[in-house]
Image 1 (tube, rainbow, N blue to C red):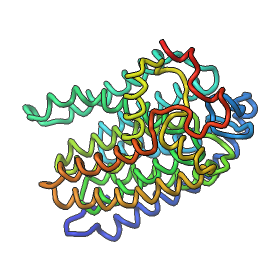
Image 2 (tube, rainbow, N blue to C red):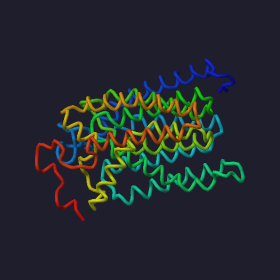
Image 3 (tube, rainbow, N blue to C red):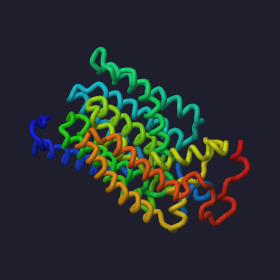
Image 4 (cartoon, one colour):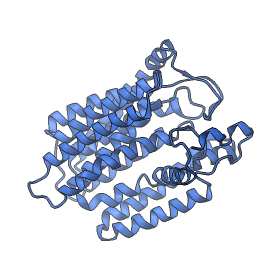
Length: 358
């Protein structure tokens, strides 16, 4: 793959990214229907009610339509570029998506899911450590990688509670990351992998947009959280000056999931039990529309893209930009009552039941 040598990407490099994204969009879109038929055959249909926010029976596990082809593409990219870290992320991601699919189908204990995710994250951290120069001062920070990856894996799953939100967020992170990374002159493997993911999500999102015809399920949401965070950390190790930009892009999801978890933990709730207390869920009930919330998050992501670009081009201001971004995002989620149960719930049964209190 041609390398960028000037202030802008080589035309051939940009064309390659667009071609890869386009090809993955076609493949993913073509796979959705067969995957839905398979899910129906397995009886993997999520019924309305409980803590869900949908109104009709919907197949769950459709994330396989994009996780499998993207993983195959990443393996090819890693082999071509000789990037052992990307290869590890691709293979570990397959393990995570397989575990998520089993959870969608038969249900797995939280400790089992966390064990698999933790092992996969440790494998990525080990590969990253092995790729570092001997004596790198950043080496001790590798121990934080598994914690960050596992948290991002689960927060993406937490945020997949209304039609189209998590899938569109994954599309935003992948597309924005690919564009910013490429224009910064980053290593081609990372930009190409992100472009492949963005393209595949373009093919999948129309099926998941409100009203969703298929849910991506844990097979898709955990894969998105795992791989996007792992690639972002890989990019940070390759170019430390980009860390603030990568931190800014997912600020909405990180703020909502973290604030909600903290409030529930303070109330000593069972954190493994389903609920409808995220800010995005409250907003969906208040507006009566999943689509309105997805569009609101998309509009806010536009601002985050500008902030990430500013952090990327002014590395010395990266820390303050990230801090201000999270202060604003956190305040917005607090105003939307993230972590507060019963906001606009029409039925008393949807409020926090006593059995959720330890």
